[in-house]
Length: 266
Image 1 (cartoon, rainbow, N blue to C red):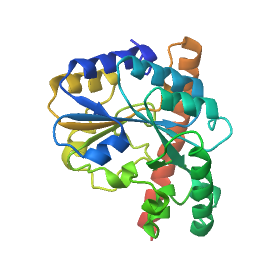
Image 2: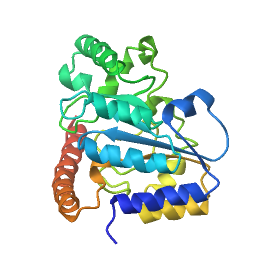
Image 3: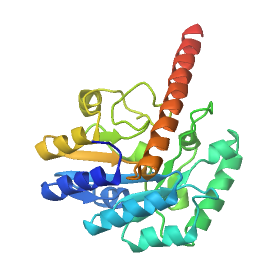
Image 4: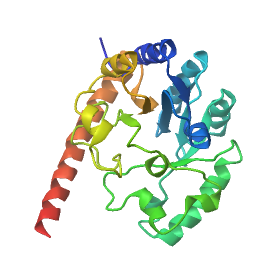
């Protein structure tokens, strides 16, 4: 069976629906920070907005509210799409890449952040933001908050800073795989790779593995990041995504290896 199709994503939602987990988006989790069994669903709207809408509609069928982080780029920042995601009951968040746009200049990046956030808020209530990762940049977009506070902009949380991953298992399809392979350049946690994420990071490889984990219900809280542009049923689109991602993964592995060597040389 092909992985990363909307059909198998439906299977994932069915497993969640049939379990004793409650589902939530990032904003609601941060507001209520409940103990118990929770699955936090979030998505980065990087491209292919039509696939994001298909996933948002599917989740709506199950009564699930996820978070969709929209980039502020021409082929993603589409007002009608933003409104539809919000009207389906999902949280709309800001997928910022302002350090990239400002080429590492934090003062300029803050100005861009405020301006783009203001534009996004014309179409939805936005209270959380999440950085977009550019593997080629020497900085990270989250570096903006080393010397600044996102709460000054009415943002209550940023998943990479605000979620407690000592008790939340973080699963991401970065690289078009759930496995914690050596291809994650920017989508990495601040915390050391021990505990939950160290225990499961090497064993969860496919969506079926995620489904099995949910059915076992042995982890109380899970945050699942799925990039909807990677998920489609059509064989042509699915194959193109597979080939392109494999090429990207080779490049990202090379970047990580290069930076490790450079670090050893210092």
